[in-house]
Image 1 (cartoon, helix red, strand yellow):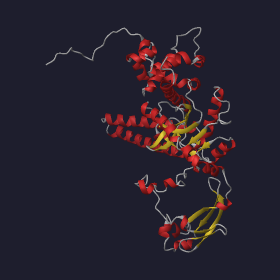
Image 2 (image 1 turned 120 degrees about the vertical axis):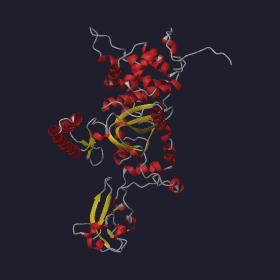
Image 3 (image 1 turned 30 degrees about the vertical axis):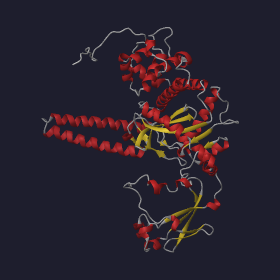
Image 4 (image 1 turned 90 degrees about the vertical axis):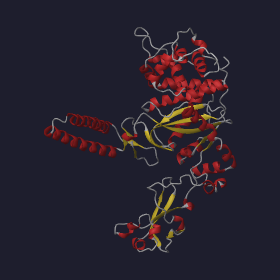
Length: 525
């Protein structure tokens, strides 16, 4: 048998190292070190320190930024874990110069300086521009919905929260009754009495929490065309309940605007609502003002070389189309029916099958569609499939402002109709006096005036529009893939819109620094 020198990895050694030698050119840690030391002005953080004449010396913001950005690049968001890395990891020791900031210092730095972090994001964007990484030809906008540090079980409208509070109150009364009963009949059951007491304490805290929230807060209003109350959250009322491909989450929507040339993020904002249509205008206004402030372009959306804006169907509504048309923004944002108008997708369902093969339990059953009714838009007459003339109930605009004619079947006609089981969702509705017959509505195309959505449909459906929009996914989706998969951002660890927005910007900075490392000249320095 050959002989080898023995070795043991489970041992400690005292070695002499040079911290700067650990930050090798071409690595991410070297890019951070070079940027913060040579290219970035951190004076925006200085106004928050007031220890010039006395007090304990503070950790340099440069040190804290280096270890936080490097930790985020490795998917580490826990401030306790970052502190542990500074104690045990050589690269963290090199970036922090062998200092070990307390985890509370790290957590406070991330959550306390949102304005300074925004200025830092802008400075890194300016460096990207100086390195020639911005093409300014096409910007893709999209949102990435992530869970936050709040439980969706504590969500609800004010009415639902009041019902939950009343339910807890009833449970407290029941537990108190049981506690008194045990105290009188079987005082030796100490463990059971203690468990009941703990249950009462837990329910008391939950009751006080809900009650205090209802007394001090106001109902949240949604951003839809018809404002209505949306669910509040007791833990973080600025977060929102959002539907994703993986289910419903309580969190924030991280919206990013990405430049096509090298996928540099030029704007990053977090919103506490699942709907994206109301985020388009503030995002475009922020992009315009930021590029003007940095001296990159005075008015990015005007002039001969203005960029193309692309976004998915979540950003499409009439108000946004009017904004884009009025401001002469060269944008391509399709409505949710644009694929049904494209001949290339006509056989998609037949060829690949439907997207959702299993029907949800609460899905409405199929009935005779409105297209089977004989509708005369000139005389406003409607004949049902059974041959009966149904009553005209008037004209009124739908949620998009388009005029529609509404009809309802006469009660006696629907009650005695032989096909009512196929025609009505609830056939029994026609069997009693206060019920209703089949209701249908039709869009009055001849009375509808052209709108801004029609203008956008024409742009998107053109050959040029299809070619331009095909670039959207390849520009913005890899960015979210890099941040959520490679950098392992699967949830926001903070509460409150300002704090979450700062954390989202820090992660987007990590992405931009990585682009600078790969395509800029930092690696050679």
